[in-house]
Image (cartoon, rainbow, N blue to C red):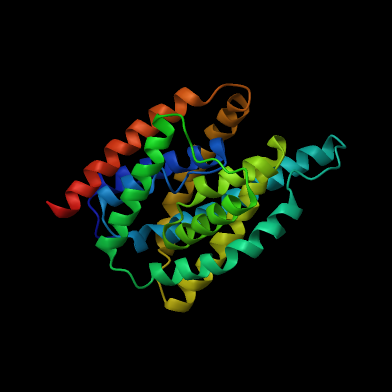
Length: 256
């Protein structure tokens, strides 16, 4: 990332603040809601995906640890993570995840960027219409989990599909931490693939982008507490509209 201009670096910093806020505030979507913006700054997915992956590993671990520590201090013994459903769902997701990772490493950058923008556009429309993907049958559960795992393997933006299944099967008070543990597992697989393939992990960039994500993480913690007590429909519509605009602009910029 040393070849970016000062303006681009400032924009990247701000986007990672946003990413940390969304990830901690919602429990998902940090990559989905930041990648379109990052690709508008610099259209190289493999530059940003390792950074996003490492940040997810760090802050998902931190959040789950903090929540369980609070429960232990309060002498509340049940874990905030539904380990049984993680084990069950991983049996479905592991193969599509590996196929997705292989696809990321072989698809040209401009094609991968176009795929990401299209996927984000579809997600955005479902949020704007307040009709997010829903799953209530074992067959659709399997389809959503498999497709979400594959998309997660290619670009780290499969969370909405996976979350629709988890929302049905995991208690609300355990949902965010359970998703964080799942993201940790899925992202670890991707990181291993990056290492094997010799992908540059952009280690120097972490020195200044980890603090950016930490800022967003701090405000996301407060937002999450308010969100679970409020109706998030308006928030999703605003975010969906912004993402649809950004993704449309991104797609146009690829071919103009």
